[in-house]
Length: 231
Image (tube, rainbow, N blue to C red):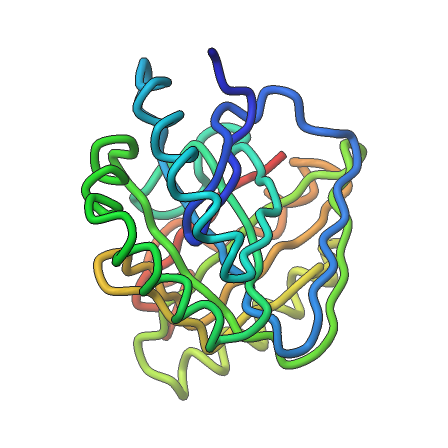
């Protein structure tokens, strides 16, 4: 059986492909929930192994409160950075305690949990965030969306850069849908930027007009960044 979605499960469940995304997707997050974001790259021709993984991992994660949220495809070549995932998957846990307990349950009841992930996905980077307030955002097929992740080099310079960058984005027509900070990554899945945001644009051309120079001089105070268009 061929998968058309990659459901995220704990960091885990995704149904692969994302070939049939709905035209509108709304994400509702509540204060105290934990929001998982996974960037991964799919390995072709592994449907049987993926089926086995989901059949075993999904019931364990769901029993511990995990709710898969589907995901988004990476819509073309990344704009910045050295990583090109094919999928950004999302999901939620009721609380930090539930997330930690869920991971323990998965590792205890499924001894090859991490090994299977390595076999299925050549890259699997996970960040989770405890929500400090209720947040809701909607992705539609009528807009253009970009995920930006920054790692700070020097906090003072980075803070100054970020303020200027956000102002430039707003003047160019970019609307931030969500801004995430203070995240964490489980052992073995490190992708923990100091700042991650999803920004909505009228079109790709409008976004490109907002880009700083593609060099270190264009990003003072930034140690590293990744930037992906999503659909």
